[in-house]
Image (cartoon, rainbow, N blue to C red; front, side):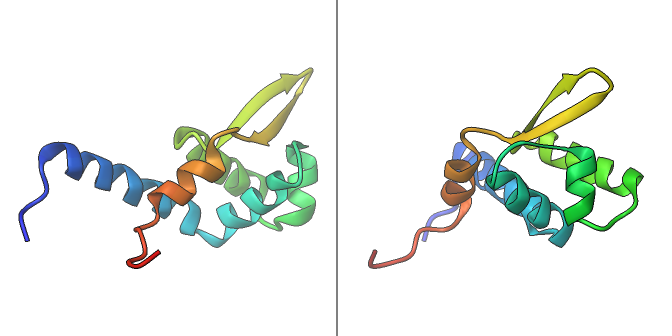
Length: 99
C-alpha cells in the first residue's frame, strides 16, 4: 500500500473534519431536525434541550463546516440544512468494499 498524496490527505482531512462535526449528539439532533425543514433557534431549542449559548456554538460549528445555512428574519435567525449537506456527509464516509 502506498502513502496517500498531499491531495488525498487533504480530502481525507476534510472528510474527517466533516464527520467529527456531525458525530456530536447535539449537532446530529440539529441536523435531523433541519432535515425536516428550516427552523428558527426557538424551534430548535424545543427539540434540542441545551442552553442557548451551547446551541449557538453547535450551530456555528455546523455553519463553519457548510452543513447549515442561516438567514436573518428581523431579530431572528432561521437555519436550514445546506442543499449539498446530505451528499457531502455521504461522500465523507469510506467506500464499502464490494458495493
